[in-house]
Length: 114
Image (cartoon, rainbow, N blue to C red; front, side):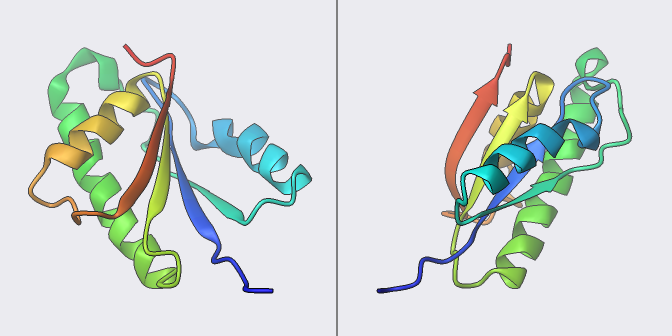
C-alpha cells in the first residue's frame, strides 16, 4: 500500500478566540485515525472583529505559518485551513495577500464566519 502524507490542518480562532479551542478538533481527528495533524494559531485573543487591521496582521502571520508547516511537511504539499468566526475572515484575507504561497492551501473550512 502507498503511504499517504500527513496533511497539516491549521485552526484559526476568531474574535478574542483562543488557540485552545482546537482541542476538540484534534481529539476528533485522533479518534478517527485520520492522516491529519492539527496545528493552531495563537493570536493572543486579539479583538479581530474591532478593526480590519487585526485581520490583515493575522493573515500575514497565517501565511508565515503556512510556509513553516510546508517546510516541516514537504510531502504534504498543501495545508487545510479551519477558521472559526473571524478566523474564517483571516483565512480568506490570507489568500489575497502577496505573501500567500500560491497553491499552498488545499481547502478552507469556515465555521460561523460572517
